[in-house]
Length: 405
Image (cartoon, rainbow, N blue to C red; front, side, top):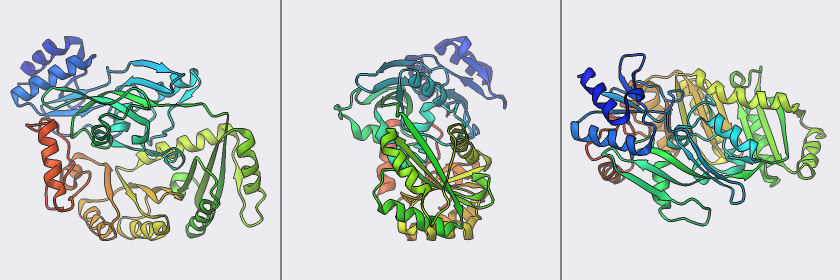
């Protein structure tokens, strides 16, 4: 079947777009939305299973399928409007390339996703993986005005708009952001931008974890608009102790007094990083999450952060932790088996704490699902949504567990 499949994919998307991945699975990377839709339409007609890929740097490229469908050739920066602070960019463009292009135009996409900076923009949106800047600038969905998506049966749908004032179809946009590709393949994104901020200061405080979370709560109470207020475990911060990192961004006249106040505090020994060292610090923390084979995302109320971190440590070990000390969000990375994660999910569910399996080998994703069991009634709704966007389940995405989670 492989030779015939490759030949047919080549007929649809062009021979140059087809290759075999390192495991010998056919991989097609269409260079247009129309060609990608035709591939999905043919897969729907033939009963072929599709593995969705960007550049394979976030989720392991190991889901069983008849072929892999990559967005890497959909990498155009279609339009950038500095006047309106919006951009239209294809989903296969790497985040780093987008960052550089926007920087040259004096603009900025205010998200800092974890992982390899060369990961595709589409993977960031599909998995909704926000970094520490979510504290000051909001989650990924706040930066997506609209998008185009190709369904499992080859339809091209448009959601949202290209300008900030246009909110038509916003719910469909939210469905795709964080849907892990279960409701279609994102091909084009309409994004909200910001003007580059002139000043950026990072200050660190090392110490015992519980003391740092107390300091963080005190800082939140001051009402200072932090861009990021993140707590890092020793391994992720490359230090001997837990580290609380504060990032201030904006006009120098606004952030310098606050930086000086923190440094001058008699109760805490804050250390301000030089600009190049600050860039390295945040980059190292972002890439460090990839050191663990499994990555979990959780969220709790701010006062419950210590309890959640204790629970993680007891159930699956300290691992690599990046926690929003001003928001209660937690990302954990390390090694953990299905039974331990299932028990952790049971315990967190009892506390009404959501747990998302962000990254893991396929076998874990298949058994546990990205989101696990749904509340009563939600599973049927998700099932109907999947039927609407992928009627014959061509897209191989494990959003629900398969063995009784």
